[in-house]
Image (cartoon, rainbow, N blue to C red; front, side, top):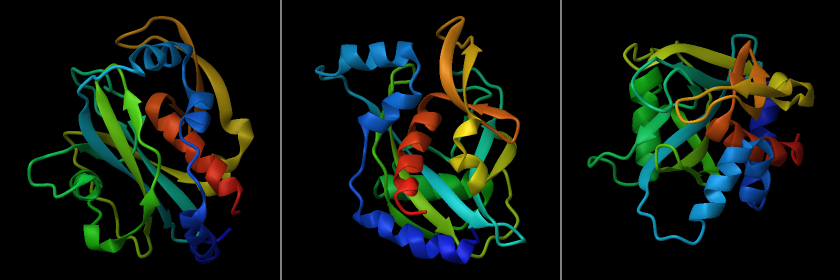
Length: 213
């Protein structure tokens, strides 16, 4: 599918009900499901963050989804694949401002160049105590990305067809900063394993797109 057809179809996503936990849980490690169950009825004060789920055309007008590999650092999300985004800062008017600002800072996409389609379901990440709000956006006329090398190791530009292909969902045994030797559902895309909160967000997105494409 070319980007022009994609933009016409994806506009209808605004009218679809979000799937939330029902879709998130399909790509959640068992340890995450247990953690979420424990905190479900608590009054835990959560930190806030936002990310941008960005689609754009490549030079052949093929639809791609932007992911990035984070640098290695002292933190639970070190060296993991995710979307451009980050924590709320005082200068942000709202969560969408956070997602747009962070996208510009991390990959160089000007906020005015992104057409924000809608928000997706928020998701809580127990290891870092962040509640993350994803936004779906289109970057119609992309310029070369400019990465923030202090935070971003590399960009992962995923063809839409690969993202939508169920054969690219795997089970991977991983050891993390907070768990050892666990089997997790994941996407295998462009040679990278995408799991955790990012995969859970992608699960909802994929199910929504299946209703439109």
